[in-house]
Image (cartoon, rainbow, N blue to C red; front, side):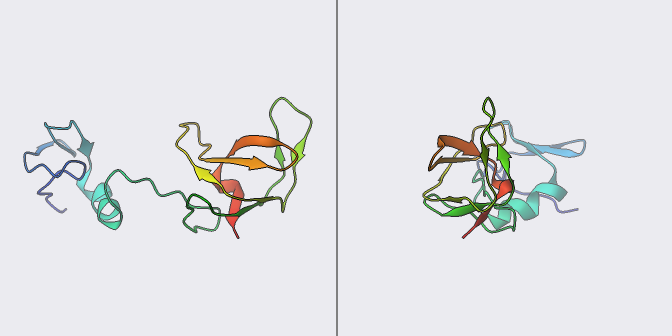
Length: 119
């Protein structure tokens, strides 16, 4: 097991071990040294990386294609497989819908990244 020397969130040196977790008293961040260490060094701390169904990293302004028929809640309409969605915006809605977009014929809606692939 690696012994961390800094908090991955605020880079504070004042950290301590509490059972299986490491705790930072300055920002109240708790993490497991085995699980968090490789993930935090890969990307900047606190930055969420959103990937499509194939594992490609998505960015604002990308064009994606829907890979599954998606029923629209409260309507009998369906977004068909192969529908192209241009100029997506990445959001953190908290409910799994991390893409905000406008689809021709349907209007503005939120999609889950697991149902799209990058073009």
